[in-house]
Each structure stands twice: as structure tokens, then as C-alpha cells.
Amino acid sequence: MRKLPHPFTAADRAAGYRYDVSILQAEFSLTQVLDRPVTGRVFFEEVIRENLDIGRPDQVQLIFDRRVSRRTPGRCRTRVITEGVVPSLHVDYKSSRIKQYHKEGRALRTETTINNTRDFGIGKHLRNLPALRSIGFQANRRLLDVQTVSHDCAIGEDAFDQVVRPIEVDGQRASALHFGDPRTQALLAAIVLFGIQTCGFDNQQLRSHLVSLLGLDSNNYPPGRMSYVLRRLRLHGLIERIPKSYRYQLTPQGLRIAMFFSRTYARLLRPGLADITDSSTISPSTLRSAFDRLQSTIDQRCEDLKLAA
Image (cartoon, rainbow, N blue to C red; front, side, top):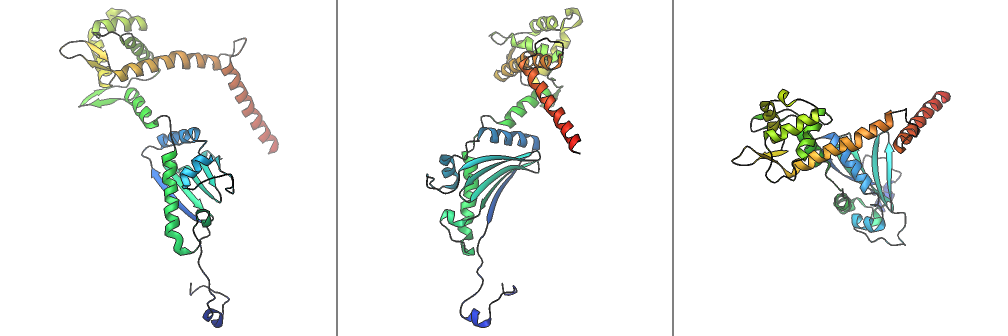
């Protein structure tokens, strides 16, 4: 401060006139780096979708630990702002706000910016910075505590990868069960049939159902090949061997995955893709109409940009 130029004369300084450092704006940030950027982006999009009410007064007073009433100045609101392709979540309280976004594609960034320290009953002198710091970081933590998501994106991604990617268990390797592959879909549909069979199933029983779904001759699908398939299912955690026998049963997770994969493929993807790709239908479905409107809007936008250029 002694090096900064100022208009005060020696007499002014002797009388006590001088510059006083004050806090005009303070920002306190919390950055949580994620090991998988794609998972982080999916997680943050779920946070935005399910916490649009985070700016309501009853939520804001939990985040900032301040009572909010009708006489509280300013607006309590939630805003979702998209800059380029990166969305950000904003929560306002008086002259302060919290901003949350996916930073550089690999971290969840939470920033509390305080523009008026007196919103929290704190003066603007620099000596008040430690107290302001405590409020800012507590607001970041409270926001994360208040926020909720209905499901853990990482758990779902791990469960999906456990099936559709190659796996190694205790030195034993098994190839992937690719979603959408006809043999995989037939296999999953076949094991679902044994979901309520308490005594399990054996090589022969599963083979008879599988060759029927694949349209093959059982002579062209030997038991040894079926044993390899059973090993794949076991290592992927979909089935388990019944002790002291050559029979198998579905695991609880295996039944859920097999049913979900089969139904998603048969009832959602196949009919949905038929709706949006088949142009010969006389009366288009709601899904096809929605895609047609989207394509028309994109085409019109491109045309407008060419006219503007």
C-alpha cells in the first residue's frame, strides 16, 4: 500500500486519512475431480434435471444458513445457463450466487460468489475475510448436501460395462456379451425363462431353448460350445453354479440385467427405430412426427444462416 499513488498529503496522513482495503467481491470454490469425464457429465446433467427447485426460498435458506422471508430483498431463483455445450446451474440469494458446472470436462465445480458481505451481517474490511471464507465454503458444502439424484450414474455404467465388455475374474477371461448382438439377445432371452425355476437348469436345457431362438439345428450346437457360453455367463455374474451339481441358476442381478436388456431391445429399440426410419407408413407415429419436426427445424435453421451470410 505504501507503493500505491494516492492524493493524501503528509498532513492528511497525519490526520488519519488513508486508503482502507475492503472486500468488493469474494469467490470461494470447491472442485471435485472425477476419474471418468463422461460419467461426470452424465451425473451433472442428472443433478440439473432433478434439482431445478434448489432456488426456492426453503432450499436457499438451507444452503446459505440464512432465514428467507417475503421481505428478503432480491429474488431466490434457479437458473440453468448454457454456454456453448456446457450447462451451469445458478442459485441466487440477495447479491450473492452459487454457480455449479462441469469444469473442463472432468470436474464438478461449485463456486459461491459474494458481492455484498453485509448480506451475511459481515463488514467489508479485509479482516473479515476469514469469517466470509467460512460462509462461502459452508454454502458450497450445503449445496452438495441438499442436492439429490434418483440414481447413481456410475453404478449403472459399471453394471453395463460388466456385461458388454470383456472381463477377467481370478485369471479367467471371458469375452463380452455385446448388447444388440443377435446371439447375445437370444441368450439373455433364453436364461430369463429359467428365472422362476427353483432347481436351476443344466447345459442341455439351456441349449435346447437357445438353438430354438437362433433357428439352428441342435446337432450344429454341441454341448462343449454350450459349456463355453455357460462359463461366459458365470464370469459376467449373470449365473452361478449350484454347489455339488452341474446345474446353474440366475443371480438376482443376472435376472434383472437379462430382463432389462431383452425388453429394452425388443420393446423400445426395434419398434422405435422402425418408427423413425420407415417412411412408407401411411400414418406416422408420434415418435416419427417428432423427429420430422426436429429435422425440419434444423433444415430451416441452416437455410436461415445461409441467407444471413
